[in-house]
Structure formats: structure tokens, C-alpha cells
Image 1: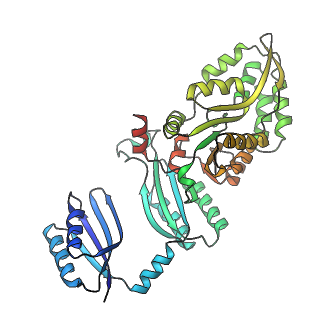
Image 2: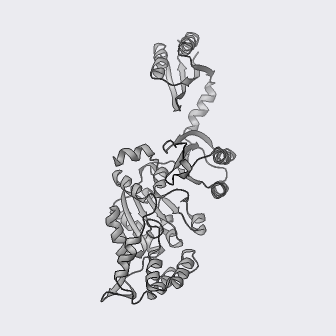
Image 3: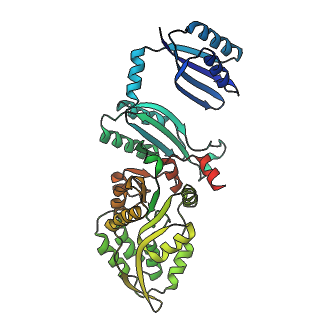
Length: 409
């Protein structure tokens, strides 16, 4: 009679353990139905599901495995698996899989407990948990602003109530200073090819038009209009023209002064080179100005830039914009245009932005990410990142810290 046995090996890891146990299995000519191994801080956990052929006998095999475990001072356990239960497991492997990514400066047990409780409440089974971030140093870790922590959880099945589950994740994220991404694990998720970014308050820390307004002495008036537009309270085109009109007469040299004090967003200088090393195409789709977009394109080696052309005559800003305004709908159109030009499926596109005018392009992309966004945008976007820098995007596509190090060296 055929026997199916789950073998579980655990103990201090050292070279040759897996080889020793699989060599014993080989002598008995068993079939390996499934295998998984993990090492956490030099502690091995190895699971092997084997089928002992009908002509074979399990007892001598188990005896030899026990002897080997005793010799190496590790633990081995055996569990017989019913054939019907095994067939149920085989049938279940066709279920949909999802990836839950946790991002923060530090992952705590409390955060994990709340997230995994939501997972269990929705009938999802956890298949694996993997740390994508590098190991965190204990001393001074909280003082290091560059500290990043990420855990990726692979789950199987469909949530009982996807909307309620997402709402629960959002609540945990807000209360526990944690970002939680929930994505279907598909071939597209593992093969993104294009990333498009908003510019102001996304790739750079500032809103350029506010900086120009400060140079022109109309900062308060422009900032008030900008804030209302970003919250989605004003039509973008109308508000944009109103703000640009207030810049009339500004000296062209003010643009250079603003550029010289602009700061890149945390993680941008790690993210873009890594994406380029992986073969991604990149684009800036901005409601800001091409003058600054072109500078950023050169600085970060971006492939495309589309923004608004600020009219300048005789060294002075006229207060007008040349050509079609790049608003929310235009951003979505440009995203699709670039994807078509590059022969890239929309499911392979990532869009990143922070304002209400970014929502159309976030919705058009296979992966839309609200980055340090306003509450309205964060609520309506598929995914969001608020706790880490832009390089947190790499975790959402499964890139580990050590992968980044290899790519950038």
C-alpha cells in the first residue's frame, strides 16, 4: 500500500543537512511530492512530503532518518497524510494567490498579529512569509532615517469580503504607522515594465508652483489655490490657469533659484537606477512645468517627460501656459500612449502620484500607488506608501535589499 508521509526537520543549521536527509530518501527511492526549506538566524526548518511506493516499506526509512537526526543533534518528526487529504491539497493549488506586503520603518509583532488576523478572518491561507528588507541593526536603528523594513506574505484563496478586508487593512495602516499592499499574484505582477511618476511632491519634495509664487511674492494666494486643487475641491485646469496668472512678470532667473533648492524625495536616487538596471522604462507625467521636468529627466535618467510649458518672453514669465494642460485625464492618456509606444500591457505599468489629479493615471495602471498622498487619494488608490521613501516601490514588485545592492554595484 502506498504511503504519504510529511517529514519535518528542525534544528541548528549547518552545511550538508539537506544533502544527508535527501540521500537517505534517495536510497529508498521515494518520490518527493513537495519540499520547502527556510533558515531564520541559523535555525533550519525543512519540510518534505514524500510518497513511499507500494513495493517499499516506510519503517526502515523512518528509522534511518531518526538515526541521522540523532547523530546530528536535530529534531525530525513524521506525520502520515491521508490520500484523500493529499488530493484535496492538489486540487487547491489552482486557487488564486495574493501577495500582502507590509512596509514600515520597523515591523512589530503587534502589526503582524493584526494583519494576519484579518487574513484568517477572510479565509485566506498563508503559504509563506519572506523578509525583503535587510537585517536591521539594533543599536541606533530608530535614529537612522533610512531604516526600512518589509515582510512579504503569500496567501492562497479569495477573501470572503474584499472591500471589508481592504478597509480593515487601511484602518490598521493608519493606526499602526504601516503600509499594507494587497495584490493578486500574477505573471504581470512579477513582470512590470514601465513606471510613470507625478513630479511635484512625488519625485521632488516641493510643489514648484508654490516655490515660484514665493519668488513672485504671491505665495499665500497660490498656496491656497494649490491646496484646494490637490484635495479635489477645484477644477484643475481653472485653478492651474489662475495660479500661473499670478506669476506674471516673474524674472526667468527665479526658475534657476527654485531649481537650485529643490530636493529629491527620499528613495528616488535608489529607486530610479534600480529600475533602469532591471530594464524598466520611466516617465514623468506632471501637472507642473517642463522646465523643471527636463532638469529632473537629466538628473535621474528618466526616459520621458510630459508637463506644462510655462510661457516666457523677454526673460519674464507671461502668466500663460503654452499648449494643452496636463491634467488628470491627460496624464492617463499619456500613460496609455507611452505603454502603446513601448508595446507594454497596461497591467505591466506602475503609476505613482500624490494628488487628486493623479487618480486617473493611478486607475489606468496595473499598479497604482498613492505616495504620501492626501486622504482622498489614499482612500481611492489601489495601493499606498506613506511610511517609506519612493524606493519602497521596489518591495511591491518583490525586489529585495540584497538584489538592489547587486544591481547598483
